[in-house]
Image 1 (cartoon, rainbow, N blue to C red):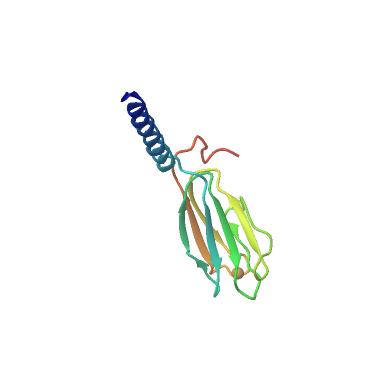
Image 2: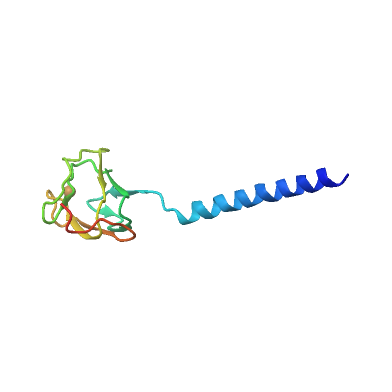
Amino acid sequence: MTYPHIHKLVLVGLLMMGVFGGEVVAQTTSLPQRHVVKIQDFAFQPPQITVAPGDTVVWVNKDFVPHFVSLANGRWQSDVLEEDKTWELLVDETGSFHYVCIFHPEMAGEVTAHGHSALSLNQP
Ligand SMILES: [Cu+2]
């Protein structure tokens, strides 16, 4: 007579375990993120960001003059960014990357990438 009751409790218990198990998985799995760097008043804001390999950095030009995002060694560079235009970079390696605006060399920023990744700085 009490068996149906017990079965219900067990079922509820299993469901709760499943929910908590899902939360743990969600917390320990880091999904790729998008980081936005505003270009405003002739500056990269924020000037320094920290990302993980696999993340994407999005630069958006909020100035009325065109800007440019270029890694110091020319490894990657954006197109000319007119007002309200964006440019995205998929970060696929670790390290610190200093970049400048070619039009305004005093504008400088840095992307620091570290975390779990099989990719290395030496990968082409
Ligand atoms: Cu500029």
